[in-house]
Image: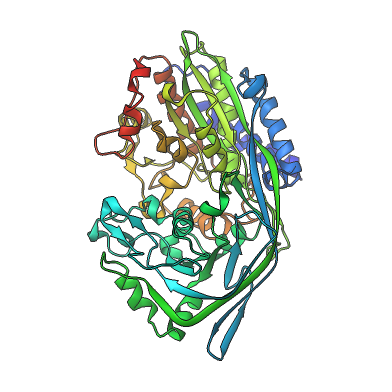
Length: 551
């Protein structure tokens, strides 16, 4: 049955391969929808165990990528002449999780994955918090350059802080303190955990609300219900809090009321520079769980096509190969989080780009393809590479990140996440025009996508990176069926066991997006251009500091 379904998919996508380079302007080989389809199907097969890091699924994935890159004509681009860059991580597996909130004579036990999601990234054997007071600190932001400090002079050491997700502008974009509706780094949960550690808190509870988070509670429960990972740190106690957690909004409303406060009123007050932390009087938390801490090695997979004239200058293409792995069963009993769209699509795009590049004349600059590990654990594979680059970041010309690509058809536009930041914008615009597409800035900047994928650790260090794929309106969607399927993915498949390969996908949009990434990258690979950051970008000064190395 599986072979028959795949054969039908090949027939359905054959026409896409034939027209993939319409107006292609010299592409050395067609971008094949059939090839992409087969790679996605393989990488998201149950036998890959959800591509969990440091599992048999990783072993199979690394082997598959290495074989495919070699077959395409690329050479090993990792360390010591191999295909990989080893990445050492600490792994934290929580078990026997118990929790209870108390206020006077009232108490409420909570269940992991239902009302709360508890985790830690602090090395140790257990977490045990007893009668710890709760303090609401608004959005948990301390940003001197924006004259914003939610903590003021309040000492939160040894306490659990309760914070809102996103930043203050989400509820009132007219404030324009944090860039309006678009989420900033201050809105990300990763920042809130880091800031809590800097302030000496015992823990953090992020109040989950679907709109400002941009995903539902099930995504939180699944993502924090499996082992967590972190890079090795010299002083983890100074950089990590014992308890990193989330709680459902309804629970937060109840706790605020029992502490003599009104959740909605305090949430409104938090949208002001004058906000001061508020203790939930008499409300405390007991939380305990065992922690199995271990050190693991996982791998970034790197392939390279050396440039003919300037091999020390690099064009990057990146995608994360990992997904959640095996977790708790869903309603159908499925425990494997296959990650077909997220991110077998982007990983498959790397393989197809290798084939297309190798089929043509050797570019003047080197082409490097990186399959990052541990994206789902907090962009850790890309963070490790950015901190320990195999190829100098100063002479990395630009890069293209491929994550969660389109499988429901083509778009009238090209969505550019982070539009307005770099000089790659105009190049993307010209390439999109060859397909009759316009440019659309990120359609949902409030989701913080610019800070949620593997380009960001490189961006922070000044490398111009494009995250451009998908669009706003589907072509040929008079009945709205394509948009309905895309909406369904976000609602019930993203980070769920249901993110599985389907034989009736339409990869037109994916093919077109890969073509644009190839066009812009190939143009840069055969030029002496060094695209930079536009005036006003917070990443411009970082890049300018190494400008002399690009002359």
